[in-house]
Image 1 (cartoon, helix red, strand yellow):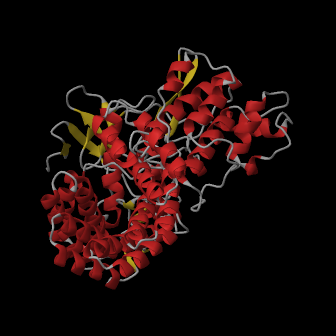
Image 2: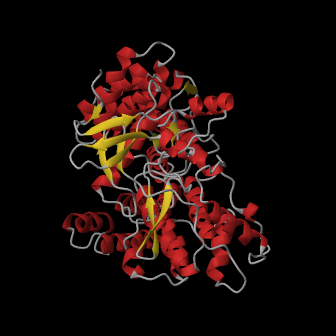
Image 3: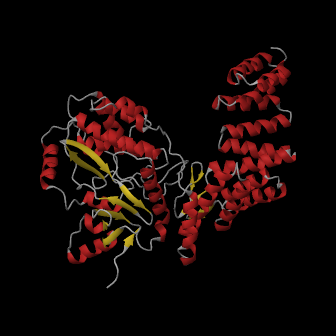
Length: 537
């Protein structure tokens, strides 16, 4: 007899979960229905004797390595920050071990206040996950690029976002990260409560709903939707699944319905939560709303890059050539991300990371980061060679992906380098040329960077090039744009003061100098600098 498999020296596996593919095949051949237990790995906690459920990466699924690492990162975040209303997680590593969940039941029909309380609880979960870059359904769509087929750790179906009744009150117990195979059961509810399904059908037939049909809810797969908007629509849809709109309800219900249909009624989860509070849920929601993180756009994914890199390097020796891109290229992304985090305080360590990223995937953004680090370390000749390599690199790469801020840990067949990264390459080459005194090349590249991505850093760099060429009017115009975009920056405003002073536009220079004085109150160095430039004014 073989010894039972034990996870983390604690959880003894009873049965291993099966893949949807094998279950579909068996059902097609033998007409055997399958249920939730078939999809889970079931185990027993040796410490307590309690049954637990394990979400394991599919065996040999090298193509899902990035998704598994992201799911585990989200699980660790749920534990570390005690994300409320989620199913307890007992262990993370080679999968996620959950406490036994409550039974999956179809959505009950609730009064608006009760439904709002459940939807607000879901908002508290989603807002905290958006803060670490977790959201949407199929990765990101930005700057016209396609969304990436990365399974999200959030699933809103009734097998993952579960409802449970305690002391007569309905609450949620959300599986985060989600077991996405369970979503198959949402569409084929073999284990559903027949009475609840009958009630749902009667609700649709008895004329109690408004004229708007349920088909106006957002489609399950809309890969081009912004991930925040996608989750707002799904949260609104969750409320409507509990309390469909009826005649005479408050205006907030109509706003929720329109949000579910895809209208940009609000821009973040806190905005939706404020709508739901208007429906009268019980509880002190003022304090809870004030504690919600606000994200109108997903930040780059937050992962433990040391852990990701160690796991990726450990997998490399066992991969055959056709499997390598699914690990090698996202691993390069991880090295690049860690290099970016180390750049300010440990540039030598960051350079070693980005050297490894270039070795694994010589895509242009990695070369650009290498050029920036070499330039920062004073290795100008090597920096010039690195930025030249960036412009010689192909415009696309297989399997690794670009996100809004550079690179994230995602996986896709082909990724085209977007305008933001092209702008970064031109800005880097232009900045190096400016330091070299090649003002014509500097202006050319920095203008191209501004055309592609007119952010404040690019505007400021182009202004510096124009100033060096003696075009003070052009420099001042760019500096004014930078100040308008980032009014809290003393650096951009000071450069504008200098340009305006040299142009003889003293009143404008004084206006911005006085703004600086208010911003730098108590800084004697700033005051002395302004006195030297403008006299006693």
